[in-house]
Amino acid sequence: MSLEFSADAQKKIAALCERYPTKQPVVMAALHLAQKDFGHLSDDALRLVASTLGLPYAHVYGVATFYTMYRREPSGKTTIRMCTNISCMLRGGYEVLAAFEKHLGVKKGGTTPNKLFTLIEEECIAACANAPCAIAGTSYLLDLTPDQVPTIIADLEKRPSPESEVV
Ligand code: FES
Image (tube, rainbow, N blue to C red; front, side, top):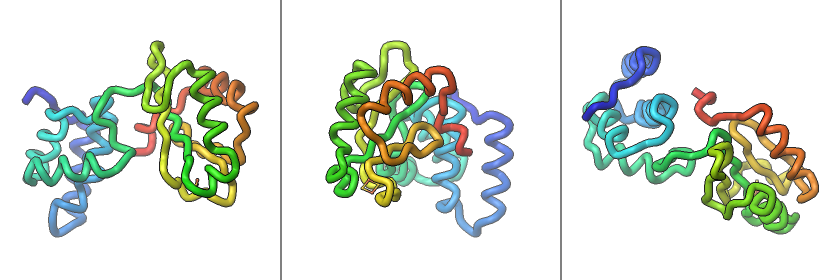
């Protein structure tokens, strides 16, 4: 294994390990930090998290592959997570998703060739009152309509919003 956590990540993980009696509660934060350091969670990154916390690889793999915020593949600078769950679907979520696909030139799950955007179809993101909605990087986009999409993309091209800024 050749990966190593950054000094900042090592410090944060050590502080979290002191806060809990076991290492399991630290897994999710450590995965976020690994994703921030390495861009995505490769097998080596998962092995690093497992060995750092002294937990089985299978446990770390299980957590990393359960939650959609963990990326197993490289992604664009800004990830757009368009909700198409029931409230958003009923209020035009699929039309907004189609507009993102059209204006980004990629299908859901894809990354633009310039590596600026990854488009994901997401389950409920807990903002149903403002359906249809999406998360772009670290920001919510509420009450979306298809005609807003070109402006949203242009703004994000100028000011990308990496999810890694969450940790
Ligand atoms: S269904 Fe889209 S936010 Fe809940």
